[in-house]
Length: 191
Image (cartoon, rainbow, N blue to C red; front, side):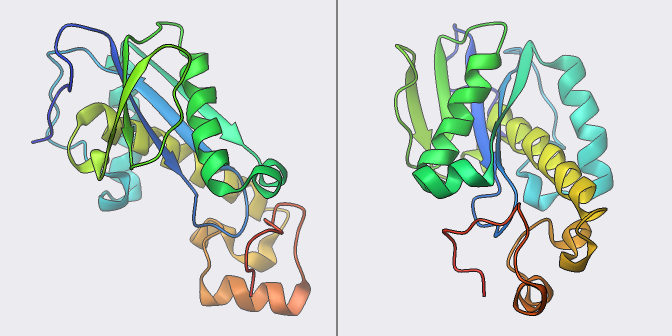
């Protein structure tokens, strides 16, 4: 069972991002504020949940969250500022879109730049420890997978509907054979 909160008596947003290791597409972050008494044994790191279950959990999370939001940084911006800065920017964008402003942030991972005057704590493997971070990972993963599946309709040669832009053998072979698309990250090693 994941912990319900890091700080007990304040609005706390959990943040996570998806897509750092991809060769194509945006990096997506989500921020989620859950009620302090919220419990759900099925919520965990999005990578450990089937697609079907993840989609059902997203509905459950959105229906029960005090607030949630998505932040997006596209591949062109990733190429300009690098993937670490883009991941942090995506998280800032997500936090910025929250209607309820959090008093504290818990961030998955070990790197983050302060967001305005809101205190934060970075938590390595936070999506395996805290419900709000795991919930953010589920929302971000579903959003990004849907985005890449949508783009796969036009760019079917890259198999994004199954690899979601990650560096699979099939994806790399398609890049070698057909070149890159407008969604590929030129600053990454693509082959």
